[in-house]
Image (cartoon, rainbow, N blue to C red):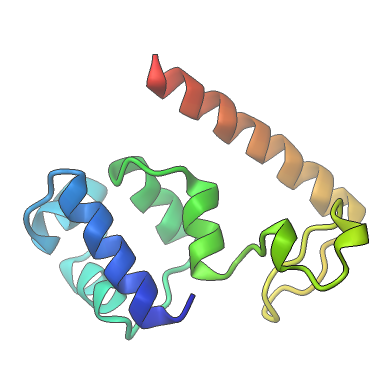
Length: 120
């Protein structure tokens, strides 16, 4: 997703989560108002750490933000669908090692567990 569309998506999530202004989200999340503004305007691509912080306040799963920001590709976006077990990051990170994949799998299991706990 290009930066402008991602910014529009995050602004939509902010409003749906009850934050009327960027400043309110900044205060709740601990991020600067300028950072929120640049992300929503599409002039700054948020880091994975920033997305992790935002996901906690925007009522959205972290993996959704990672995918929309282009850090993760969905399986149906891969050219070679026979290799669905591999996880690819954007060009900044490249293909991950088996050890990194296992750590990521642990993290994703935790995120899914955390999302289930938040539903209850």
